[in-house]
Image (cartoon, rainbow, N blue to C red; front, side, top):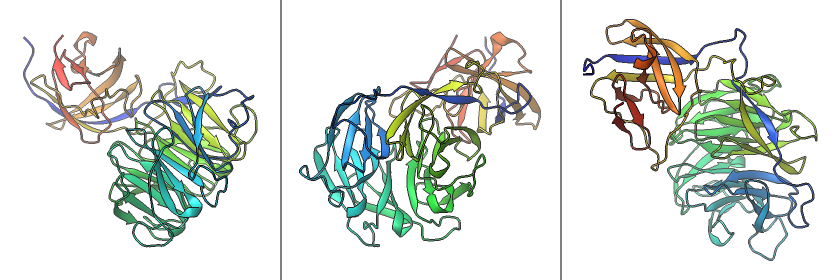
Length: 427
């Protein structure tokens, strides 16, 4: 019979320096995305933004040709469109930013026409809203746009130095921001992204920083300053976030990408000035697919590049043995009745959310104030928390990470969890 005694732990999780010096948890390697001999009419001329739809299709806003272009995940051309269909004039159709919702509707910022246009995934026009101005629902050269997992539209209203929020039909909800360099103020915001927890990230381009807000515009944090070192930016033109909460910044004038955790802690850099594979010139936007591959739109190299994430620092063959210290969150853990309350998002499995496959360790503080050292292991997709108090590997405590600071669940020694349903099963 398993013990029914309860112990409550508050866990501050971090990743220890296993190999001494702080090295990258992973790096990004170039992947061939499409052939260089694309047919006429299928060539990307000047990408301004890029998104990946739920189907895995890749959509590119080509501002030079006034087209939205659609490709598969390998870069094979599918279709393209503009609206009105008979124009090639960017004064009539100027696609600058793209967002995509769960139904694969495409939302486009029509930069020069100060409006948002909405299409289905094949390019059929649905609706539009907005006109030039500074009132609610009006725009002054809107650039970035994103659709949150909750179905809200956030628009970087660049010349009005604010973010506007709408529903998917274009109904105005709220806005925040004004010109300046203080918290919650902007100088030409060009990129915007939203994560599954309701946070909104803004590329505050001419303030050379990223700002983070809650879904109503409440300021949370900011990071970055003008420069070329790690954690510094020079005119960041885009920001994106993946399903695990990692933030990708298009550090445009430094000709590189930077990756952070959701708290603004630096993780890695990839890209440098050049035309060769893996090099960049004017990266202005990026998108991440369900597999963690990163698609980077380069305005000045007139192309999209695809990168895959490889565990471990560059040159170690993907072994991933060197880990950096990264703050992951505070979690309340309770032994007891063998049930688990885990987040389920649209019925999808939550896997490796803001977490690394193994090696995390730290100290759990018990309800009585005692410190209990622990280490995290990974086995067939299940996270285990192993405490010295338990002591034996076959008595590991299953520990499901869901990237929610303060998240709670009850765990039973020797049990495991079906993450899809959120229900416990015994072993």
